[in-house]
Amino acid sequence: MLISTIKSLKNTSLLMAAGILSTSFFTASCTKDKPEDLTKPKTEVPTQYSFENVAYGGQTVRLLLIRDLVAKVEEAKTMPVTAAALVSIYENTGGQYTEISANKKLSDKVATPADDAQLRAWFDSVEVNSKAGKGVILSNGLDLKHAIEKTLMGTLIYHRAVNDYLKKSAAADNNTVTPGEGTKMQHGWDEAFGYFGAARDYNNYTDAQIITPGEKDSDGDGKIDVKSEKNFYYAQTAAKRDVGSATFATGSQSDFTKAMFDAFLAGRSGIDKKEYATRDESINTILTNWDKLIAATVVHYINDVKKDKASGNANLNTHWTEMLGYFWMISYNPDKKLTNTQVSELNTLFGNNVNDITTEKLNSAAAILKASYGFTDQQIQSW
View 1 (cartoon, rainbow, N blue to C red):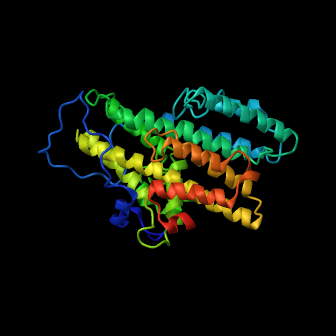
View 2 (tube, rainbow, N blue to C red):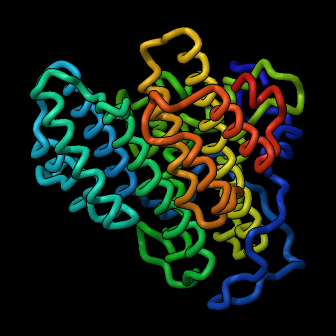
View 3 (tube, rainbow, N blue to C red):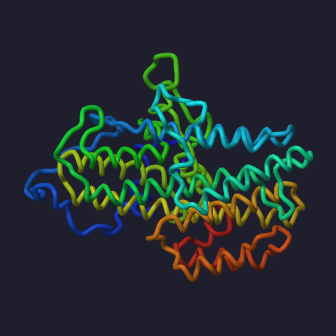
């Protein structure tokens, strides 16, 4: 897969490797609707997320608030930042982005009270560290900027997309249409897509364009619509892994971007047409690839940490924290590929102090991920 290749033309064999043909996660259609007419011909799926009654403004606002929160923590590298300033963004007390969706905040959408408490504790640590001129690195090596960002990617974005929307959408009503939002099933699906963070014409970006600049004025109106013309977080992470494997041998290249976006398109189209087998297959494809994408990113940072340790790179703390952060994300999907025992083993190997990490531990962690996800040797060694 060349970086410059337009996503709609990517090799379909890569979709098979990425899981696009995986077994359906669900086995039954929604019981609240009429059964699917299996004799009805399947209609063409659009190449863009251009469906009627699409609304996920709340998800976009929260992605923007996470961006703003992380930017404020970044300031703590060079100047004092108070916990109150961070809490204000976390709670959205200033009412930011009401033109997109009103009364949205981060604090009411984290997965557990323990996650909320941890984030607030880290806000306090940002204040203490920055006032002491110590930036954002704690004594154990944890980079507060990335710990906060990656935790929110897991406890809010990933958790809500998977557990609140994708899995529950299969049991939602798909008959009553609310103007501007569609049916509850359509709306839930759109909200999951909103948290994935892809531009609606994601297939028309190259992987490199998704990463940077990550946006383009597709409708030519002279401005960027953050709801439709911007790529955030996981949508960009997918492109990073695809770029990272673009020069790998056939069978080791990934295509998370194409697999996940096309599944979002097929699933929404299937819901619109009450083709629930298509919806269920799409759910399975998204869940499988999202889980694998996160695991692949853990592998990527394992390799970074190994290189940092070998060279004495100053980025060791940051890369170790990013490795931990993506690892933490995995458990927010109850149907993750890793067993709970393996999660416990990895937690022990990664540890809670950067000084305790060793190459041997990192290699053992990579071996667990390789065995669980079927990563190739080249992916494990070079992602």
